[in-house]
Image 1 (spheres, one colour):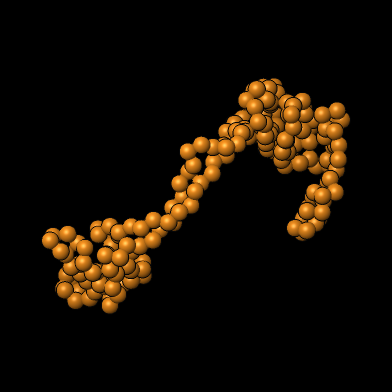
Image 2: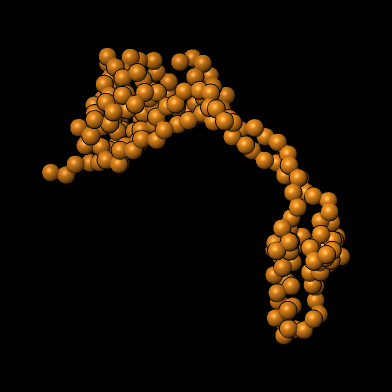
Length: 195
Protein backbone atom coordinates (compact mmCIF):
# COMPACT_ATOMS: atom_id res chain seq x y z
CA UNK A 1 0.00 0.00 0.00
CA UNK A 2 2.79 2.47 0.89
CA UNK A 3 4.72 1.82 -2.33
CA UNK A 4 1.54 2.21 -4.39
CA UNK A 5 0.68 5.50 -2.63
CA UNK A 6 4.23 6.77 -3.25
CA UNK A 7 3.99 5.92 -6.96
CA UNK A 8 0.66 7.74 -7.27
CA UNK A 9 2.19 10.78 -5.55
CA UNK A 10 5.23 10.76 -7.83
CA UNK A 11 2.88 10.84 -10.82
CA UNK A 12 0.75 13.67 -9.40
CA UNK A 13 -2.30 11.49 -8.82
CA UNK A 14 -2.53 11.53 -5.02
CA UNK A 15 -5.55 13.86 -5.09
CA UNK A 16 -7.45 11.41 -7.31
CA UNK A 17 -6.64 8.08 -5.67
CA UNK A 18 -7.07 6.79 -2.14
CA UNK A 19 -5.07 3.74 -1.07
CA UNK A 20 -6.45 1.30 1.47
CA UNK A 21 -5.36 -2.15 2.57
CA UNK A 22 -8.31 -4.49 3.13
CA UNK A 23 -9.22 -8.14 2.72
CA UNK A 24 -12.18 -7.67 0.42
CA UNK A 25 -12.92 -11.40 0.18
CA UNK A 26 -13.64 -11.51 3.93
CA UNK A 27 -14.86 -7.93 4.52
CA UNK A 28 -16.06 -6.84 1.10
CA UNK A 29 -15.46 -3.46 -0.51
CA UNK A 30 -15.93 -0.42 1.74
CA UNK A 31 -19.01 1.60 0.83
CA UNK A 32 -18.20 4.71 -1.21
CA UNK A 33 -20.51 7.72 -1.14
CA UNK A 34 -21.96 8.19 -4.62
CA UNK A 35 -20.57 4.89 -5.82
CA UNK A 36 -17.70 4.21 -8.22
CA UNK A 37 -17.44 4.17 -12.00
CA UNK A 38 -15.31 1.05 -12.33
CA UNK A 39 -13.80 -1.87 -10.41
CA UNK A 40 -10.72 -3.85 -11.42
CA UNK A 41 -10.18 -7.27 -9.86
CA UNK A 42 -6.96 -9.29 -9.78
CA UNK A 43 -7.81 -12.01 -7.28
CA UNK A 44 -7.62 -15.81 -7.08
CA UNK A 45 -11.41 -16.00 -6.53
CA UNK A 46 -12.92 -12.87 -8.10
CA UNK A 47 -16.41 -14.39 -8.20
CA UNK A 48 -16.51 -14.17 -4.38
CA UNK A 49 -16.50 -10.34 -4.43
CA UNK A 50 -18.92 -9.66 -7.30
CA UNK A 51 -21.78 -8.99 -4.88
CA UNK A 52 -19.72 -6.47 -2.91
CA UNK A 53 -18.38 -4.78 -6.04
CA UNK A 54 -21.88 -4.51 -7.47
CA UNK A 55 -23.11 -2.59 -4.41
CA UNK A 56 -20.54 0.16 -4.99
CA UNK A 57 -20.81 0.33 -8.78
CA UNK A 58 -22.90 3.09 -10.31
CA UNK A 59 -25.41 2.27 -13.01
CA UNK A 60 -23.47 1.73 -16.26
CA UNK A 61 -20.37 1.13 -14.13
CA UNK A 62 -17.76 -1.25 -15.52
CA UNK A 63 -16.10 -4.20 -13.90
CA UNK A 64 -12.90 -5.82 -15.18
CA UNK A 65 -11.39 -9.02 -13.81
CA UNK A 66 -8.03 -10.56 -14.64
CA UNK A 67 -7.59 -14.32 -14.23
CA UNK A 68 -4.87 -16.70 -15.47
CA UNK A 69 -7.16 -19.78 -15.69
CA UNK A 70 -10.30 -20.34 -17.73
CA UNK A 71 -12.03 -22.04 -14.78
CA UNK A 72 -11.74 -18.79 -12.84
CA UNK A 73 -13.24 -16.95 -15.79
CA UNK A 74 -16.19 -19.33 -15.96
CA UNK A 75 -16.99 -18.92 -12.26
CA UNK A 76 -16.67 -15.12 -12.52
CA UNK A 77 -18.95 -14.94 -15.57
CA UNK A 78 -21.57 -17.04 -13.79
CA UNK A 79 -21.45 -14.69 -10.78
CA UNK A 80 -21.75 -11.64 -13.05
CA UNK A 81 -24.72 -13.14 -14.88
CA UNK A 82 -26.48 -13.88 -11.57
CA UNK A 83 -26.11 -10.22 -10.60
CA UNK A 84 -27.65 -9.24 -13.98
CA UNK A 85 -24.51 -7.66 -15.41
CA UNK A 86 -24.71 -7.14 -19.17
CA UNK A 87 -22.21 -7.15 -22.00
CA UNK A 88 -20.07 -9.83 -20.40
CA UNK A 89 -17.01 -10.39 -22.60
CA UNK A 90 -13.73 -12.18 -22.08
CA UNK A 91 -10.51 -11.57 -24.01
CA UNK A 92 -7.46 -13.80 -23.96
CA UNK A 93 -4.21 -11.98 -23.24
CA UNK A 94 -1.11 -13.54 -24.75
CA UNK A 95 2.54 -12.68 -24.33
CA UNK A 96 4.19 -12.29 -27.72
CA UNK A 97 7.74 -11.12 -28.27
CA UNK A 98 8.83 -9.52 -31.53
CA UNK A 99 12.32 -9.40 -33.02
CA UNK A 100 13.29 -6.10 -34.64
CA UNK A 101 15.53 -5.96 -37.68
CA UNK A 102 16.34 -4.02 -40.83
CA UNK A 103 15.71 -4.98 -44.41
CA UNK A 104 16.24 -3.44 -47.84
CA UNK A 105 13.50 -2.84 -50.38
CA UNK A 106 12.92 -1.40 -53.84
CA UNK A 107 10.02 1.03 -54.03
CA UNK A 108 7.15 -0.31 -56.19
CA UNK A 109 7.12 1.60 -59.48
CA UNK A 110 3.36 2.04 -59.61
CA UNK A 111 3.42 3.88 -56.26
CA UNK A 112 6.65 5.77 -56.82
CA UNK A 113 4.98 9.18 -56.89
CA UNK A 114 3.56 8.56 -53.42
CA UNK A 115 7.07 7.85 -52.14
CA UNK A 116 8.80 10.82 -53.80
CA UNK A 117 6.29 13.63 -53.27
CA UNK A 118 4.23 15.09 -50.46
CA UNK A 119 0.45 15.21 -50.39
CA UNK A 120 0.61 18.98 -50.90
CA UNK A 121 2.83 18.61 -53.99
CA UNK A 122 0.47 16.05 -55.53
CA UNK A 123 -2.55 18.25 -54.81
CA UNK A 124 -0.88 21.26 -56.44
CA UNK A 125 0.09 19.13 -59.44
CA UNK A 126 -3.53 18.00 -59.92
CA UNK A 127 -4.72 21.61 -59.76
CA UNK A 128 -2.18 22.66 -62.41
CA UNK A 129 -3.11 19.75 -64.66
CA UNK A 130 -6.80 20.59 -64.35
CA UNK A 131 -5.99 24.26 -65.07
CA UNK A 132 -3.89 23.36 -68.11
CA UNK A 133 -6.71 21.21 -69.51
CA UNK A 134 -4.47 18.32 -70.33
CA UNK A 135 -1.44 20.34 -71.49
CA UNK A 136 2.00 18.91 -70.92
CA UNK A 137 3.09 21.77 -68.68
CA UNK A 138 3.80 21.27 -65.01
CA UNK A 139 5.64 18.51 -63.21
CA UNK A 140 5.71 15.05 -64.66
CA UNK A 141 6.98 11.80 -63.27
CA UNK A 142 9.66 10.41 -65.57
CA UNK A 143 11.08 6.92 -65.19
CA UNK A 144 14.02 5.69 -67.18
CA UNK A 145 13.78 2.05 -68.04
CA UNK A 146 16.42 -0.52 -68.89
CA UNK A 147 15.30 -3.43 -71.03
CA UNK A 148 11.65 -2.56 -70.42
CA UNK A 149 12.09 -2.73 -66.62
CA UNK A 150 11.91 0.43 -64.56
CA UNK A 151 15.22 0.22 -62.78
CA UNK A 152 16.67 3.58 -63.73
CA UNK A 153 16.51 6.92 -61.94
CA UNK A 154 13.21 8.65 -61.32
CA UNK A 155 13.09 12.42 -61.05
CA UNK A 156 10.36 14.78 -60.03
CA UNK A 157 10.60 18.48 -59.33
CA UNK A 158 14.35 18.23 -59.49
CA UNK A 159 14.47 15.40 -56.94
CA UNK A 160 16.32 12.23 -57.84
CA UNK A 161 15.44 8.85 -56.38
CA UNK A 162 17.70 6.02 -57.43
CA UNK A 163 15.90 2.72 -57.70
CA UNK A 164 19.24 0.97 -57.82
CA UNK A 165 19.84 1.98 -54.21
CA UNK A 166 17.22 0.21 -52.12
CA UNK A 167 15.66 1.89 -49.12
CA UNK A 168 15.86 0.71 -45.53
CA UNK A 169 12.92 -0.44 -43.47
CA UNK A 170 12.57 -1.51 -39.84
CA UNK A 171 10.55 -4.71 -39.54
CA UNK A 172 9.06 -6.56 -36.57
CA UNK A 173 8.82 -10.34 -36.75
CA UNK A 174 6.96 -12.35 -34.09
CA UNK A 175 8.99 -15.04 -32.41
CA UNK A 176 7.90 -18.57 -33.21
CA UNK A 177 7.40 -19.61 -29.58
CA UNK A 178 5.61 -17.47 -26.98
CA UNK A 179 7.28 -17.72 -23.60
CA UNK A 180 4.90 -16.81 -20.82
CA UNK A 181 1.50 -17.86 -19.58
CA UNK A 182 -1.82 -16.77 -20.94
CA UNK A 183 -4.39 -14.72 -19.07
CA UNK A 184 -7.97 -13.54 -19.46
CA UNK A 185 -9.64 -10.16 -19.03
CA UNK A 186 -13.37 -10.24 -18.40
CA UNK A 187 -15.46 -7.08 -18.77
CA UNK A 188 -19.08 -6.43 -17.79
CA UNK A 189 -21.45 -3.50 -17.27
CA UNK A 190 -23.83 -2.98 -14.38
CA UNK A 191 -27.32 -2.19 -15.61
CA UNK A 192 -29.83 -0.51 -13.32
CA UNK A 193 -32.85 -2.80 -13.13
CA UNK A 194 -36.24 -1.17 -13.49
CA UNK A 195 -39.23 -2.61 -11.67
